[in-house]
Image (cartoon, rainbow over all chains, first blue to last red; front, side):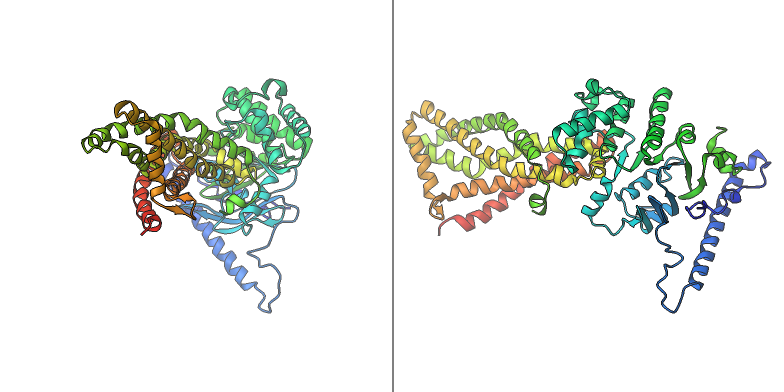
Amino acid sequence: MSDRDRGAPADPNASTDPDTSADPVDVAEGRERRADDIIRRRQEERVRTAIKDELSKDDTGDERPRPEDPGPLRGALIELERVDLAFDRPILEDVSFAAFPGETLVIVGESGTGKSTTLKLILRLLQPDNGRVYVKGKDIAPLSFTEALDVRQQMGMVFQSAALFDSMTVFENVAYPLREHTDLSDDEIEARVKEKLEFVDLAPDEVIEKLPAELSGGMKKRVGIARGMANNAEIMLYDEPTSGLDPLTTGTITRLIMKLQRELNVTSIVVSHDIRSAFRMATHIALLADRTIRFFGTPEEMAASDDRYIRDFLGGF
Amino acid sequence: MRFIFARPFYGGDLVQQMDAIGVQSLGIVLLTGFFTGMVLALQSAVQLQTFGASMYMGRLVSASMIRELGPVLAGLMVAGRVGSGIAAQLGSMKVTEQIDALNTLGTDPIKKLVTPRVLASLIMLPTLTIINDFVGIVGGNLIAQFYLDVPTSLYWRTVWEQIASDGFLFRFIPNDFVQGLTKPLVFGAVISITACFFGLNTSGGTEGVGVSTTRTVVTSSILILVLDYFLTQLLLSLLVAP
């Protein structure tokens, strides 16, 4: 499977400006020109693709999938296919990427580029204006509200603020999805809660009766992860899991996400600003910029890229 | 209605909300009803004495409490105490992503959070109104007995005469009760739906929570007073015997 198939730009380096020795005075203008060039080139490419797609249509009524609607990628657990989304302004344009079982895909990008929105699309808390979102090969856009709730049960979500229910204890928080969606007995639920808390390196007996307000930021995040994986979710989504944490706790959370992948083969999609953590945990990185995927590839490919924007974004990392 | 009858049922949440909305509002409702009944009796005493109509104190207090003051005062108290609480709680849950968390955990926030609150309000507001009416009439009784020297037995007899004088629905439900219990049912729905609406649409962090809370109290209080007029007009035209 090539990166192009997975929705990456054809050549992440194609947008590289050869003139890297520009006068510093003209840097800002040059950057704007380059951005305009990139957008224009991308639009032209999209027009050419659309024309090509139109010409390749089979007029005899063959039921083959249309080139612009190729259907889900075989084996992909999560896939966004040419997704457009706008509120009062365009948020995402022609965004495509896929995550396969056991992978950790980290979505990075500047603030306000639609990273968290992407997670909401996967959870079907939002629906795309155009394009498809596939979960386990199934387009989730046409699902009813109740069917969408069923799809969400297959995923675990860890929020930036942990979003623990503050009126419930740690035990009740982690047990919540089990009580809500399973027929497990109280003893089985207690055993599962303790197992998950131990997995996230928390001592169950010490935290189980505590309220979220009594926990530190890192502990809240870990309880959030335990709650997300309580149902043995195959897919975990993380929104800024390390934001606001000290370097040591950041390392702990990063190791935890890697442990989930390594030991339980969980597929993770992580939205993060933290490049250091992203490079540690990611099997693939997607860079969102200018409302679309600017780069998709492995951390090594990203580090080796001589795209000016990517180099600026990495900031010498 | 769809949410009330659709599975799953959150019975525990309903009981918890009935406690928060009803039982915990009991103190404020008891105080309000008792003192309103006493003030009503005190203000009327002078006029009734002037016309030698002190014996009608029971009729005056019961009619005022059951038809108007009981439902409206209980509604306003609950709007201030419970409506603001619901809006603040749901608003905080919204801004701290707990509503999104419910969604992602496969729970419908309307069923989990809104339905129990609306149902609890529908059950508890009429209950609180009955209590409010009763303590208000008891308060009036105290003033009648110690200020106007009206015997308790006479006071309560006139209370019953008033209730019976307006006729009965289906021959056994006093029309005053129908009027006095229809209103809190509507007010309960208004308070809980308004509070849930503003709470779930909170944005802008903690400041937004404050805004939602204020809007809830103001909107539901105004709606209670306006709807009270229209409900009174409607119920009078439907219930009062020609």
